[in-house]
Structures are given as C-alpha cells and as structure tokens.
Image (cartoon, rainbow, N blue to C red; front, side, top):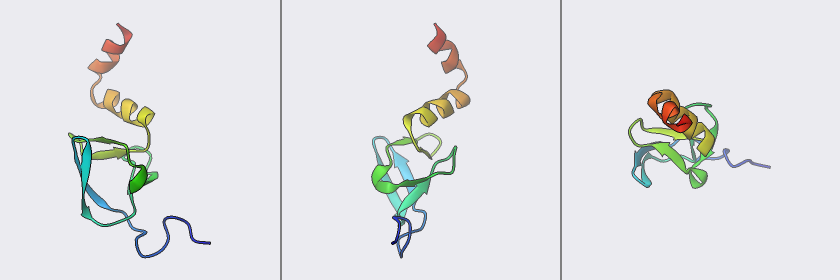
Length: 79
C-alpha cells in the first residue's frame, strides 16, 4: 500500500505564501513545518507566515512561533 507521500508527486513543494492564499512555485505534494519539520500535505496547509515565508503544522505551533519572533506579544497576552 502506498502512503500519500509516495509516487511521482511525493516531493516537497516550493511555495510563496500570500495573504489568505499561497502560490505553488515548484510542484510537490507537501511542505515542511518550519518549526517541527513535519510534512504538511498541501491540501491540509492552513497556517503560515507571509512575513517569514514559513509554514506551520497547526495553530498552536503558529502562535508559539509568532510569540517567539515577537516577544512583546507575550506581554500583551498577560494583560
């Protein structure tokens, strides 16, 4: 049985992340989470940073990365 990452399209896609959308620059079936290196199938990609051009596996990872890159946000969330 083949998994979803096997076969001719089983390589990492190159993506340009836009506001609310993304553009495939080089075809592939997945991108890597910038924090965990987890493979994210393109049809499941929901979280990314336009400013950093990074993909994230889930909302928690996206938020943690945002706070890591912008420590002032941590102070605001405690207020």
